[in-house]
Length: 165
Image 1 (cartoon, rainbow, N blue to C red):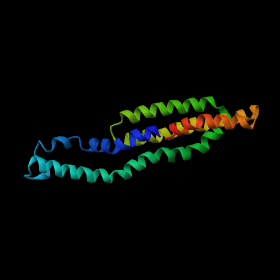
Image 2 (cartoon, one colour):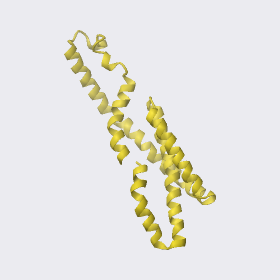
Image 3 (cartoon, one colour):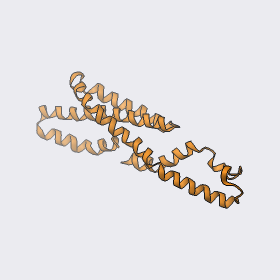
Image 4 (cartoon, rainbow, N blue to C red):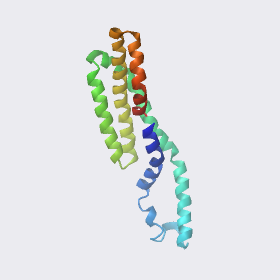
């Protein structure tokens, strides 16, 4: 949840700034199609246009953040059998590496398509680490009894939920 509280409020503004790199200088440079308005009137009109466009970016932002969940939903059924075949360590480590790299790409992305792909890759990484981690935890149940899995899930659930946001 912490990552959502930081990224969701700034993403619409960030996408707007990517698409309109000179919007701050439009008033000083004549304002383009704003005509013969005074600077204050031109700034007010630009602010109104910006507000209207930011309202319409909700779908793009929602699709971008939903891409991770969708990719994770599609990837989970493949990671489970893979984890059973090759063990838990490799998929879990691969998941952490994928999450790290996709987060770096997301942090430095300068276009919607790069942000979208990075967010989708986070779904693959999250799938690898969460499925392998949960399977590893359930494997401990065979050796330590039914209470071990409950203790593992109770200890890890806040962190798993934080990573998967």
